Amino acid sequence: MSSETESQAAFSGDVDPAIYEQYRSVSSLAVTSLLLSVVSLVMLLAIVLAPVAIAGIVLGICAVSAIRKNRETLTGSRMAIAGIVISTFALVAGSSRYVYDEYLSLPEGYEVVAFGLLQQSDQSLTQPVPDSALALDGKQVLLRGYIYPHAQKTGLTRFVMVPDFDTCCFGGQPKLTDMVEVRLADPLTVDFSFSRRKIGGTLRVHPDLKKIEDLTGVFYELEADYVD
Image (cartoon, rainbow, N blue to C red; front, side, top):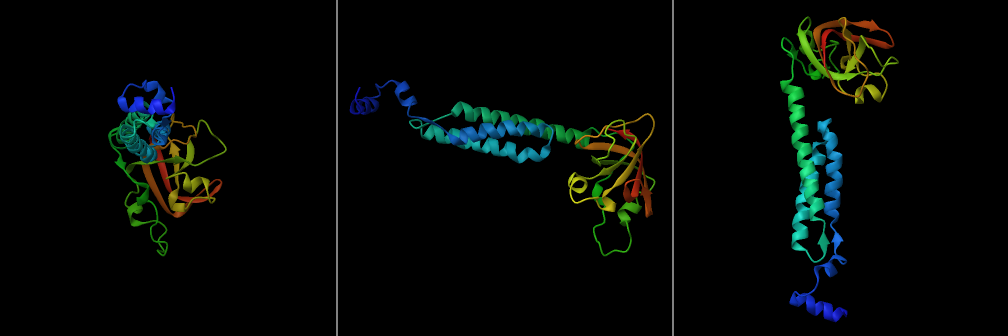
C-alpha cells in the first residue's frame, strides 16, 4: 500500500490500527510518571519523598490527557495510569504510616517534646540552654531523633541522640544543644541505624555541661526506659 493510499484509507477509517502503532511514540510524561512512582515507594519509609509521589500523580494525569488528545502520535496511557496508581498508593500509605508513627503510636505517660525546645535560638544569650529546656528538667519526655554514629554499632546502652543527620554527619561535632546523651535502663539496647527513633525517659538538664567520652560534653541527659 502506497503512502498516498494509506493516507486515504486513514481518512476513510479503513486502515488497520496496527499501521498507526509503528508511528506512535511513547509519551515522555508517562515514562517519567512511572519512574517517579517507583521512587515514591521509598516514601513508605521517608515522608520527605511526598513531593515525588505528588509529582508522579500530576505527570501521570498530564500524560493521560496528552495521549487522549494525540491518539495518532502518542501512546503509553497504561504506563501513565500505572504511575498514577503506584504514586497514589505511596502517598496514601506513606502519609498514613507517618501520622500513625508520629501522632498515634505514642506511649502513655510521656510529654512529647520537639528538639527545637532544647536548641538555643539566640546565640547572643549568655545562658547556655534556653528556658524552654530548663522547664523540662526532671520530666518524663519523649524525643524523636537519630543515634549519633559511634564505633560500636550493636547492643548500645549509652549513646548520643541528635535531631537529624545533617547535624551529626557533616561539619564535625553537632552543636551542644543538638545533643542528648541517652542512657538506657536495663535490659534495653539499640543498634545503630539511619532510622528515626522515639526514645522516652526522664530528662536531666546540666547547664554546667556534663563531660562525656569523645565529645566536648552535653547539656542534656535522658534516663530512658522506652525505645521504639
